[in-house]
Image (cartoon, rainbow, N blue to C red):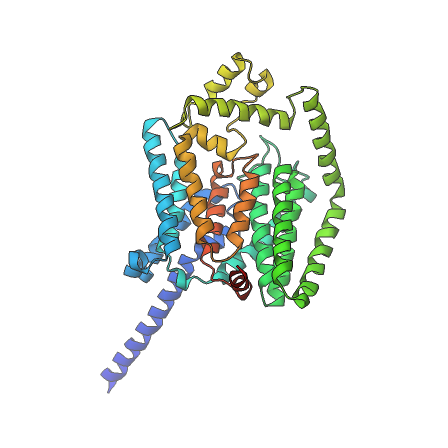
Length: 424
């Protein structure tokens, strides 16, 4: 009898242990989303911690789901094509690294995010972890804004080199806030729970206000473009009762924020007009003028090295060459820029037109594989922001953007998106 009770006790303990192990594995699997919503783009070590976190999550996926985690048969079409495109791009960059140099960090970001996405059984993906991460992101970003904007009075929120705070400078930080705001707004508009809806709206307002504080005009243009298109889409497909409940709340919050930050908006507007006038007077030393010169230099470099590019470490002498040829001014040459302030030109210069096409193929797979409209709006925002900056040159932002894009694809269509499908 005692032996029977002992074995029963062991059996129950074993069952409890198995349950706790499974819960621990689940926590480890979603650990990237916890870091995604807290410190990834706010702390200096955010990207290196995310690298370690993704390795842990990949191991947890292999342990928990075993064969189903790597079996090709269990993968969706969107997983197979998107991960294949990412793998080909990473292998191409690895080949370029051996040939003339490439961005090792970008290779690591693409490989780890693609492996994590491929091994994840998407039918088991719980979007509440993503929504929770977006709400947490709003809370931590609010603390960041309060500390650096209102207490330390940092210039453009994150400061200017060499006094920058966090892993990103002003423009990529604004792009990070742009992607967060688009996602928060999207989920706020379709979520059924009004508490979650309100938390997401407040988070979206916090993310949007951060863009104002960074004074990043290109990202602000992307934000306005995406929001206008999405609200037209939203008005078309939503019921009148939902519109009357949700839209006024957003208009009041965003309108109030615009009033509070009218000085920053007016200042950047006046600066833009002034720079346009200076361009008309052939003054190319302004922010806009310098970008035009970087783009001209990049276009000529692409024509000289069209197929494989010139590499990550060999593009600087091109600026000296183009200065000597009179294509760019001394101010642009001495600026000593790390990139071309345009993702597409930068990618083509350093990795060739082949690299650019492979890079864009990832975006195309995400666009075609999306079951909901969110990834398409994220891609639109990234497309516009990439015209004046290089988001994927910043690894923390690269992790944030790819995780958000890939797992937004995994969200099944809501009733609202099904209505879109039926209408088309």
